[in-house]
Length: 110
Image (cartoon, rainbow, N blue to C red):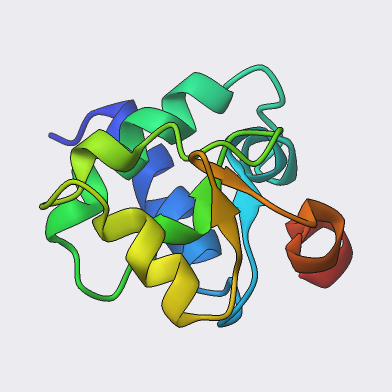
């Protein structure tokens, strides 16, 4: 028997897999898209479990202010930042710069 959260997590991963290279979205934007606007924290839990899933670009999910709040779930101290910078995203003090330019909203894009 699967838990309800497992199904929700799979829905989150389906959205995250569609975030384009060089773009980011927030936990809340994903939750809203999935019809669970008050479940941003649960999206965060899904991202915490995604670090072993190579096809889920969890580094592209940040908080609504562009902070790398999930960075401690990545191997190495700055791996999340390095992955974002490899995509051309500027990060200073654990915060994405020009967030509006690199934001991707699943409500608008999917």
